[in-house]
Image (cartoon, rainbow, N blue to C red):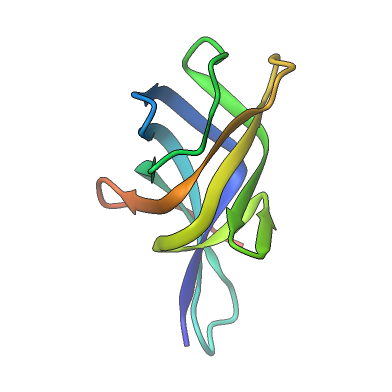
Length: 130
């Protein structure tokens, strides 16, 4: 079975907008690792993406200047926390969200809500075999 994961550290965020109910995180540079069955090597790709967290219960007021680079991130999927990577596509509901720690910005940026979606917004582009 083949699958894809996104590497959250090193991801470049071009903008974050929140209206108090929905947070939209625009990702201008996302690293995607493609793992294929029976392949000797995995491949690394990059692309643009959009993450939305809706029905927010925790919304961060303080944001870095954009574009900003993610130093570390935790994705919360109910009882499970994924640190710095997650399988994609990601569509989940319950107690879900993301905590982002940016380079050169001390405060964590946290959005927790009831639904979370992560979608690539264009075709990813090949970088290398790993």
